[in-house]
Length: 101
Image: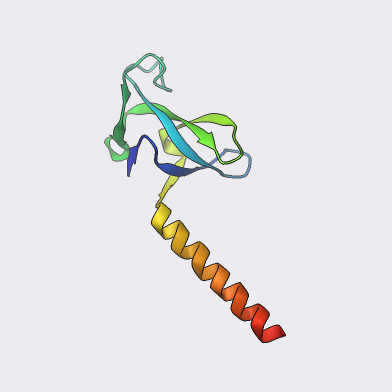
């Protein structure tokens, strides 16, 4: 999956609930002793299928800053899809409420 700075992602928070946030940094690990990519180059985008070591820093929706390894990223959340889903849910709830009246 292609990830880019500014993308909204869902991350598997091993042992806890998934986190959602916006990517602020992408670091590539160049050695086995640097799996999070702290010492490697920072890039603007990265294709996770390339299989390099590394991690992203992201600001979660709750305002907290976190980081995650590439393999913890579950998906990139498309803002258009998110808006369409929210609109559809709102419509469903309005219709349901209207039927209940």
